[in-house]
Length: 325
Image: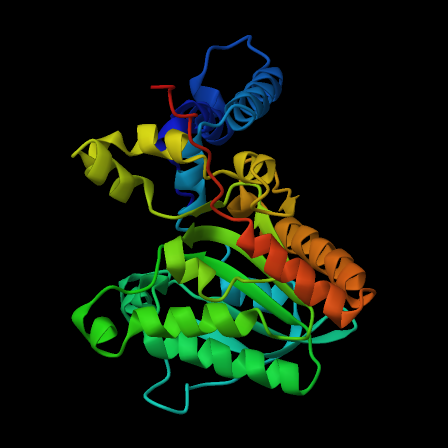
């Protein structure tokens, strides 16, 4: 069953008319060429879809990034990658099921893949903690990144999380320290490292395994220091101002590229990644292989220096000159 977002309602209405006409053509007026009517409606649907998805607002892109049918990490591990062998546990506390990772192949390249995983239903979302990791998830990610470094395997991180889990247990086990250690250690990894935001890229939860040589983002994903709802609650004291916050935060792919926060935008099919997951997976694979080839051609010292400079440049700001006394 398809899930339509609010801004897709014009498409839904036309789709209903088309289905009704296809199923019961005899109920419509005699003398009308219903096959021609079907073709006309199909053209109207294509035109409406093109108009809507060519002019998406930042908030609408956030809604697409959170679409319940959007491909998640495990979907890409079955399509973009092959021979995935999952590894579990942080060797200190537990296995965080919100985080998945292990060995895989990307084309002919052997890599280590890590990523956050959401659930498709309530039961799976509880198992995966809605894609929000505890400290043990970030420690598992670091263990796998160090393993990749030891065996000279490139790292690919698939980011899709609203943020790290902020619960009591997470704080008791030092979520801030786990993310901080990851930030430091990722700067020192000598293997090529690519991160791709495939859905939500929320705050330190995303950055905690995304300090990479190249940061890619899918066309309708977002990458932000805070969720639009959180920003709206702080600045406007009203979560209903989330659309305004989404625009102000400049968290969509085109804005992020203009600000120099991401390196490449991976195109999605018209209507979003969920409309054609196989095409999206192929586009992601092509982009990953292209960037990986470029990174492997660079000397290690050059890559490490560029990675460090890249993230040190984040968060630049300017202040107006002080007025003369």
